[in-house]
Image (tube, rainbow, N blue to C red):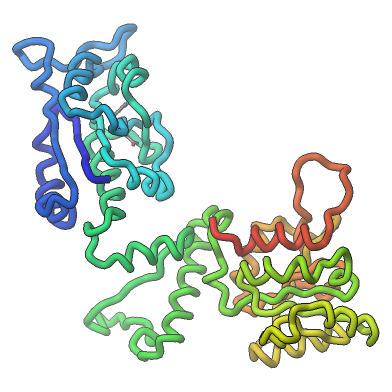
Length: 388
Ligand code: 4G0
């Protein structure tokens, strides 16, 4: 967004917003070009009338012609015309990001019962709502939207890292923040923040984000990328049979890396088959000797993880068929976060010791047979650890 135009019957209302603080500086430095068009300059009579009674009863409605003339005066041929209204699609950070890529935004600020629908149909590209509540005018939502978009424009917010961090930790709530004094009215700042131990601080902040998201906005977990919030990288667990099946191990290596897994653990009690499997991995000769680890029993694999992570792991089993004990993957995602333990993910059939069992994926078209294990595990890796 380089240019923004507000069309409003109350131009004074926008002055403070455009003159002060972060937005004020962006406008002052011409990082953003802002214009306010006074709707009353395009009134239908010399009394400055821009609204009229709604046909069929109801309150006042902004007339189409003054709005159309105001829009024309804004030179907005290539602009994206946005109309804030309670009937719009709800604004989200995703929508804010896509709007930041537009050159010129025009915000049409409605009042009373809104604007003549014929203007909306003819000129408005996007009707946007901030949420399910009603305000006296569209000016505040227009300013809110522009504020959210403006902070994504390079040069508007000084610390670009702050903006980037928001998107990296996208989808989870922020951690609490504290500043001096270290004790205020008898309430101390959490000790860890004063410790100078940056690893411990990082860990604490992630725990806080997780706890708050689960308590306040559990709905966010559905689309949140939880990988950055796990205390440790997860492990992928495969039995020898699964690993061998239609080249499962080779197929799963790349996705396991893509989704940030620490290791693939393969359990095969039979010596010959173990040798065959290990010969087929890219392990030898590529300087990645230990990315796939082989064990004779699941117990050994679990003990190896416990020792490495200094904590017993939490095993999550993906079912190939729904059983009575399994949970929805959203519930599993929550439990994984809450456990705070190193995670081992595999097929339920391969992991009799799994603490959490997850329903198999469903497409709504049943009766097409079970999925190939590599496909099944890839789908689940994306559900649990994919970026949205
Ligand atoms: C259009 C947006 C604009 C129609 C605008 C009101 C809340 C929001 C306005 C109406 C607004 C929001 C039909 C009352 C101006 N209030 N939730 N007020 N009607 O974003």
